[in-house]
Amino acid sequence: TFMLSWLAAAAAQRWVNPKSGFALKASVGCYLLLTLAGGLRFYAPSFLGAFDLEGPETFDFYGISCLADLPDMFATTKDRLDAGDRIIIHAERSTDPTDVSSYQALLQQHYAKSHTEALLVLSFVKNERSWYKLLTRNGTEMSYAKNHPVPFVETDIAPGQAPPGVAKSLQLSEQSISVTGTICFDTDFPYLTRSLSSAELLLESSATWSNIGQQHLRGHQYAAVENGQTLVKCTYDGYTGAISPHGSIVYQAPQTSGVVSFQLPQYPKLTVFPMLFMAFEIIVGLAACIWILLACSPQLSTRWLGRCHLLPERLGNEWPEWQPEERLRNAT
View 1 (cartoon, rainbow, N blue to C red):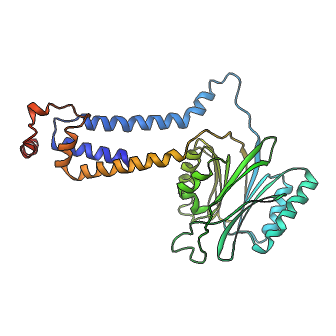
View 2 (cartoon, one colour):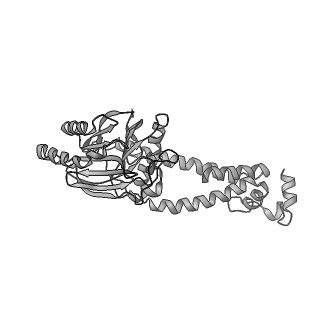
View 3 (cartoon, helix red, strand yellow):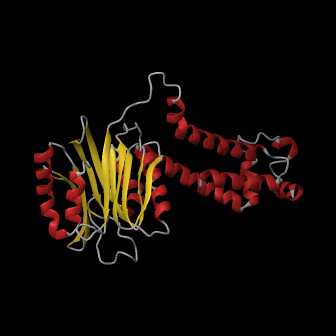
């Protein structure tokens, strides 16, 4: 928004005063520079990996399954645990609330038989709230009620009052990890996801519409990049997928119901400072309002941009300060 507003204001100033093109060139140059910087950040891991003489970095892999709208979610969950999955996610509202207490016993039985830790995400509606429960054999690691029901659609539930938390030191492989999660629409709110940036892995349970499912998955690339964490999205009637901390979609598949299973590397968490983004957004938002005002008023654009440090004009010789009306008339 800031860059487009700057471009619009600089173009308006150039239209009013054709001799003054420095502001437009500077805005176009900054836009191209930011585009280049974003591309370099996105492709840097792949590019630098090609010159890694020690070979590619090795990762631990998780077997992950997303379960959505199945006749017997409990039996299918047991089958996926027996198949070796370490993370199983129920799509939004897919868990039968009467079975919630049975899943911890299922995880305990699985560990006693295989000596393998597993993580389970349950999603169900209870007491007019849409609940998210992160479960291990030791019990509930994190639980919260959806903070932002979809307007005009989820009229059957009330918003939760507390945000999700971060479950730390969960043992799923040789290294312990920190895990958090969100429910669908909550992931669209940066102030909520940024508070979860300490987690290495974000497990999202969602339900979307098939015509926007892929766009919704791509939109959550920003949440992964902002927080430097791996994001897994399990959905009903949309796109299930996984996003790396660099924002790359490493897996995606359309899912309306049934089971989608895949392998996911345990990517290292990136060092980021998401809470600083809020200050940056405030500054950019105020600046964008100023640039929009300048774009809407050619007279203000000529007067203000014509005197700024981006336009070193000879104001005293070419356009007298006490004759702004004549300057505007001559320029047009």
